[in-house]
Structure formats: structure tokens, C-alpha cells
Length: 340
Image 1 (cartoon, rainbow, N blue to C red):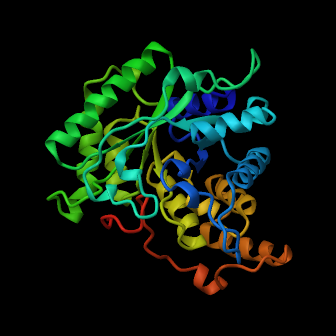
Image 2 (cartoon, one colour):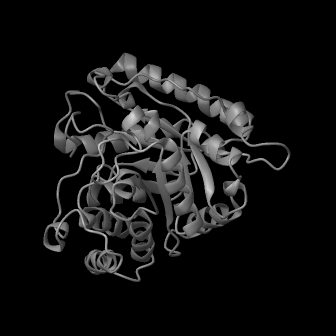
């Protein structure tokens, strides 16, 4: 990991109230959606190419407002081979280390209708070997994801696979952060209890693992103040981060960030919210200002629209509509089980 990220994590572990906050741009959607993952240019019929998408990633890296760029193994390796920027900057490169079946959501796919099954395309040695020559990028941070479904056989299989991964990670001194999704199918648990189910399964999973082999931090959906506070208060040594979910309005993104930080989150990983913004760079600029408490979410939306106007960029929504809170999906697909 980059020295800057190591320092931030160290400060947060010593004092979660130190004021540090870690922002990540999650550009790993090609591990889920396939061709449509880069999104479309506004007014265009075709999807962007991954080459165009990489340009967006690198522009955001150069801006220096994020701490982590999360992408697929293939895209991190291509970016390194095309200039090695990530090896020369303060942003830490991270890769998605597994792609469970509930994120196989390409066009026409129905895998998400079955309880999640574990799978990993990449291996730790090939990830650590990314780059060219002695000065090539050595990626040493990965995302590992688990989806619990209250299904004995499927959850047992997921935990067995996670055990193998973390033992391999320890062997290779590979750092990882852990993403936990709520059930991707109906599971017999009420909507109200899903947040507590996720919290309980998460801490139960870590209970049998030596602290030295714990994840660097967590990535979970933001289920609201109560669920966030109980997880943060349960174990201060766990750094909790949130995932961004669906695009929604600009206020959805900005308010979610501020609320999660208020109730204990110290990391945020936004993907579609950044990718689908009218101006991703400007959007990330205001994300950083919000976590630094330099501006409120409400003020940030207004300032964002003002800056779009100055740049002659037509917003997706009027300011009035963009100031509304809407329900955004927090899974990889809009058609899966509705989350709390």
C-alpha cells in the first residue's frame, strides 16, 4: 500500500476521531456487468470503451482527492503497462480479488436469482506481480467479498473459500479489505433484521481469526445510524467503510457520505455515483470537501450545480430535483432483492 494510505489507516486505528477519512473510486464494475460497465457518454448510443474508462480513472488519480483506486486486475495491469502512473503517485491501487456469483449480472444473466457462490478469477501471486521489471507496480491490496444468505450449504462454502484466501494472503503478506453484502435472494429474514444479520455474521466471521489476519477495513452497505453505530461500538479496532450503491441524485451521494461519517464510517467506496456524474472530477472534489467538513452536503449540491453551469455542462436534473433524497439500490443489480 502507498505510504499515504498506511499513515491514514494508522492514525484512524490510534484515534478514530482524528479527522482522517479514506475515499476510494470503485472502478471494478467489469467484474460484474461486462460490456456496459464503463457506462454511456451522455447522448451516445454506444457504451464507452474500457480505454476511455481508464482515462477517467487516471484523471481522478491525478486529481489526488482519492486514496484508493479499486479496479479489476486486467485494468490495473493495463494502466501500469501504459505509463505506470499508479506506481508514481500517492493513490494506492487495489484489485477485486474475487467475483462471487451474485455479481455475475451481465445482460440476460440470471445467476443472481440463486444464493451467492464463491469464485475467484485472480490469484494473489499474479496480482502481486503486476507491472514491468523491478520498478513495476506491486499491487498489495485487494477486495474480498462475501454475501451471506442464511443458507447453510452456500454460506459454509463461502466461509471455507474465505478461509483459504486469508491463509494465502497471510502467506504472501497480502493486505485485503472485506466487503459483506446482504442476502441476494429471499432468505427468511425480515427487512428490519437484515442489517443486524449482516453485522452479526460479519463479526462472527472475524471472531475466529487472529487480529493480525483481519482485513484492513470493511466495506458494507450503509443501513442507517443504528446499524452503523452498533458495529463501530462493538469493536473499535474495526475500521468500517461504506459502499456507494446506485447512482441516485447528487444529494443522495453527498448526504450518504456525511451521514455515514457522522455515525462512525471512516471509509467510502463510490463507484456508480462517480462514474455516472455529469463531471466525475468535480463530483470527487466535493466528496473530499464534505468529509473534510469544509462544506455541507446541501451546500455542496448547490456549488456543484454552479460549477457545472460555469463549465457549460448541462446537469442531469434540475437543482430542485437533484436536492431530493431517493432510494438507491445497494447491490450490483437493480433487479435483485430490495435492500433496507
